[in-house]
Amino acid sequence: MSQEIKKRPSFKVMGVLFLVFVLPVLWIMLNKTGVHYSKPLPILGERELAPNGDTIYHTIANFRLVNQNGDSVTLDTYKDKIILVSFFFASCETVCPKMNEFISQHIYREFAKDNSIQFLSFTVDPEHDSAAVLKKYAEKYIAKFPNWQFITGNRKRIYDLAATSFLIPGAQSAHQGMFHSNQIVLIDKNLRIRGVFETGGQLDKTGIIDAVRNLKLEYKKNENHTEKR
Image 1 (cartoon, rainbow, N blue to C red):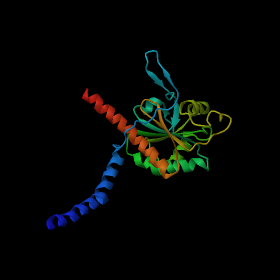
Image 2: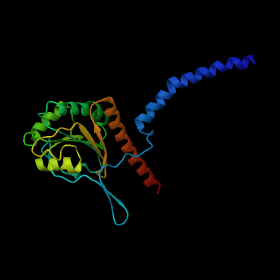
Image 3: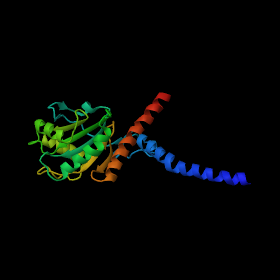
Image 4: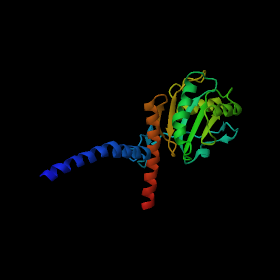
């Protein structure tokens, strides 16, 4: 009996050590790998039913615009990428610098070395934001080419993309002026919208990073499933 009593404290100590040291490590590992995700991200936008019964989802329309290096770009330029999209203009002194600083410090920094992730920032003031202006602007946010590209070009095309493709609130009625948005849009490899997020607080940071990891995990699971066939 005395021996059993002596053993009990050791189990308690082991339990405490497990809670203090092991559980936090497991949580971090799961958080970094995305293994804790059980639900796929939603697919946003209107959808239609094809005659064969398949679902046709809202997708991003193609475009031909120009990046900060003066190169012509289309959606094919970013084929097979997970894309994070935002809208801004270089002379903005309120919403835009806060948003781009948030993206730079929290989201871009997290995925800067991940070549499967593409950041695209479209100017809503292309008359003033030339490729040269955008190239200088990108330097302020330590945006490395090609993973983070700043896009300019035809104003109407950019506003149409914002309103009808990326579904940015306020863009539809802004053709006579400029609209502000502090949102970032997550696009999957099939050009479907998988999330729209505010950019500002810690919860926004966590939500965006988790969503990107979730989407990466979704593709990894699909690849593994295909390999097993």
